[in-house]
Length: 211
Image (cartoon, helix red, strand yellow):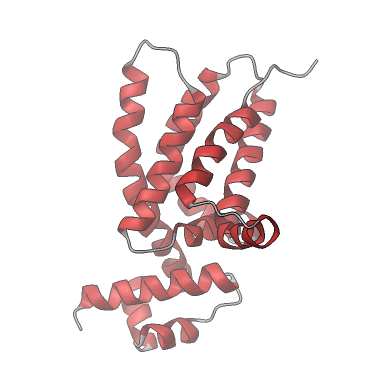
């Protein structure tokens, strides 16, 4: 097994287990057991459990940024009116496509993203801001420009309403889909759900500032 194979096995196992059990609830021994490597391999390649958690996020977010940055730069240079729906579609597509290219279920990344906000992982939030803050700020700036009448506070909350809708829907997609099949004898593929989710998220961002 090459070092790259070892790294990929550890990252995949960590992705699966962290998304299913949470960060604190998943031990390094459980991860190495699933990956079929020894504990020393984690320490050698990642330094610590914190380093492994950060590497799991980098594995997803680095390719997302590669896909999204040229699109955002093009929008920044354009004189056309910014379309919030297109910004949301580009962001979701970059996340879904990057997950699939890694051979990972997109639901896992959305669960991890939700855990980043709901579990106490200050080191992770600092890491994400430090490494991806500039790219995120570029996206947020464009979104706010698409809704200039919203105050900064209301825009902030609407962003989290959108994020909540995306994280819940995509991280729980299989369960929601199963309920639809059982209760209504109908099915919806992920692409079909995304086509409905994007305008719904845009609606959460849309609107005038409250009186």
